[in-house]
Image 1: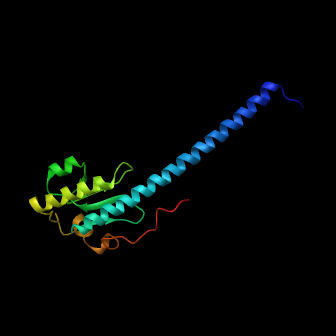
Image 2: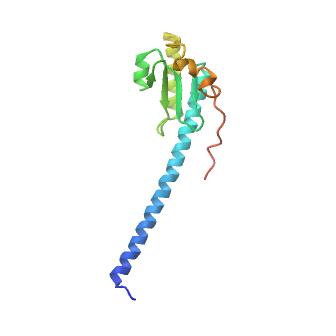
Length: 152
């Protein structure tokens, strides 16, 4: 059976539309992989900088959230918009976070600890005590999870 010309063109356009959508999905998936790599690498960098400064922190494997001891200065917490709970804080590393920002944050975090002192655990079974123990999961520096510069 022969289809009218308009139906044939419409069907062809619909297939091109599906192809375009598929290409966009592939592009966004690749972009998300790149962003995810960046966030995990940057979180590892943050963990390493905080640990090198002598402060307590943890980063779970394949995560972009760094948990650290809560700064004692509320101005620093507000300036850096840290999410705090009891005696710990956490930083979620997003794609816009750069190593330069991390260097500045750690510099201010160390200055805060030197000027105002470090957070004491609020209770014997509090989050900071767990952060400083192996019950949190692993060492202060998490195991190496891979080389994220490889192309897919």
